[in-house]
Amino acid sequence: MRSVIKAAALAVGMAMTVGAGAQEAGKREGSFVVHKLNDWLYAIGEPEYYQKNYSYLLLGSERALMFDAGANQKEDITRVAATLTDKPLSVLPSHLHFDHLGGLHNFSSVYLVDIPFTRKFKRDDGLYHVPEPVYLGNFDHMTVKPFKVDRLVKPGELIDLGGLQVRLLNTPGHTRDEVVLFDETHNVLLSGDHLYPSWLLAGNLKDYIASLDATLKLINPQTTIYGAHADEDANRVPAMTYAEVGKIREQMLAIQAGRAKGETFSDPELIKQARLFKVEKDISILTDIEFTDGRAYGYKP
Ligand SMILES: [Zn+2]
Image (tube, rainbow, N blue to C red):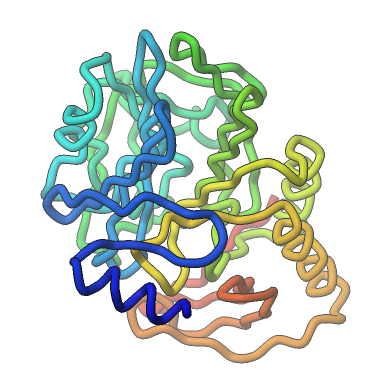
């Protein structure tokens, strides 16, 4: 039945999805695919990009906010946003990795999490100079130019877009600066690289588990969770469930205790070798990561 529906969808050229969480077919804008999730939230996917990134556009009555700038360095993601809103637009990166900063230079207003790790990038010229070993741009031959920050957002602070409020939480583990946005009114969590239904890269397991504990306290079984990378189906907006977050936490605890059974993993585009620990479906956790350029991934607190 599922494959029949999928074949019919392909026949009319739609990016339709099957299974739990019905989604509207995406609308193509160049390399981007726009999914309307509701009146105030859009997902902008990059299904052909090898990391299958999804950025999110939040629409308030006063302002609009992009959560992540996309990976695409050439096509301007703000032009896609401009087809959906005429409100002043800002961008907040979920963290400072290259695949979330590809379109950063197109934004006139950048928000950034206010923690010691990000504050140290500010130089005398008033701009933020992020070093390559932080953003890892070599993989995509990209450079993050020094940028101005319009607003620093403290962990726990509310961002008010006018009739739409989201709270920022710092959820270290993937990176130190990883953040998520929680909309309590609509019970939606935008989880960046903290949570998505594919290979999760653990930069620091202890931090990651503590952040999952904090996330599980914040959300509830009814929370809708959208992450920054798709699973095997690049055309489906990456959603997760509360139960899956719990299972990721359990598996991370098992890895930490040496109880989990891992396997050797590699991926020609990014990862020379790593340990892979399956969670369920396409969700897994990668530890002990060595990238294709020989660099090790991870940080110490
Ligand atoms: Zn990342």
